[in-house]
Length: 539
Image (tube, rainbow, N blue to C red; front, side, top):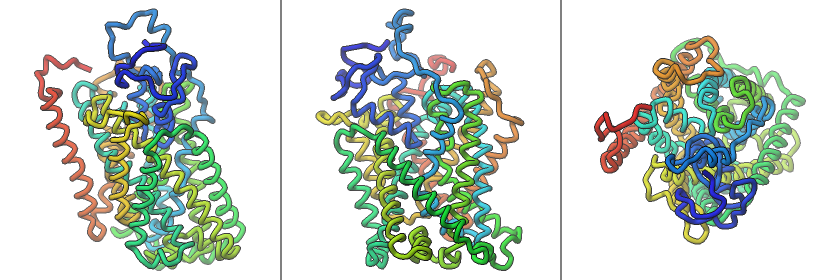
């Protein structure tokens, strides 16, 4: 039941500051802003899922906590999410979350993985994995069509009262070690392009690290207050990114130098162990640019005909972004020699778009595109930290994280403890290299989220045949197996790089720490698996 007035059990008994009642829900508060942003920026699964239960921000995923007080009349009066998103709307939402500054900072490292333009094949390898995985999340999104995405898929497919509790916890845990790295990658990318304008900064590697950390700290400080309007910022970010991307692609195609574009080194396509390892490492960097292809699944309760809309939106958005990012990458190698780009620490490595524009139009264009990318980077970091800082808070309210983080600032009514946690982790991550951060964040997600969802789908198919399946994976189980093999291949590839053991230690170390933390907390709270089996309901 949604009260029109009175205290809320889930928000501590206070109406959010600045909230007003419109159409049966309170709007205009910092909490609603957090929901909007968290669902937009790409990892708001738990936040959306948590506030599906919140009396102030209504959706239709879960039953109210107090089932005994619910009546047919009150249930009928409860506002519901309306299915209004078609294929075009859903595809545009996905693409708006996938297209960002990624190619502007990852093309040189991608080229370096195989030492030449042949590394651009990683765009297609990544697309194959993403499409196969997209069919997995499409079936899950159509079978469990509620706002919440991967958080809900993991919790419900494994059984929310048993293994699902552990998987929900592990989702939040890996978020702390992947979502914060994603934010830090934006700070580092911003500083790399800042170093093109501020030449002296590029001469001091530690200066770049401290500047990136300072940007993360500045954003955290800026968010330590009420935030009222994120939608306008997201629109400006999207338009700026499109202008920047379109400018580069059109320029590159017009000024194409095929000799540079097809300047392959000897043995470029020899299918050997080095090629496979290089392609796997390049694919990890490419997947970073594809993050967001499952965004429509977070809004599963709002799409029309989810059995049709979700799979088509996922696949079309992946194909569209593949074309755009490949053309962007190809434009760079048509103008800037790849041997110049792959030198780590060089101007072309750190700010390839600036060098690209400078070679064609002169310094004014290089400065102009640097400023555009700086703005896009800062807006992206701002939006990501705003949305991601709500995730530990919402998880704590949902019982899937430490309860200490489930409180709001007494005056500003924003999740200050959760914000500080995310901000501090971002500051720490800013002291690592860009490729290290991107590799780390993808590895942190592969086993728990990507592989976890695939196994969860297989479990759902075998043990819960009663679950409606309006969309069934095409050629089941081939896409699921292909995605699983692709993720494991990508996961293992960094192990064969110099000092690759550090990446494996990070991936397995964070998982082990998360498991230990869960079992300690579960024992303290007397939750699964520390309660008799007959006490836990089957789910």
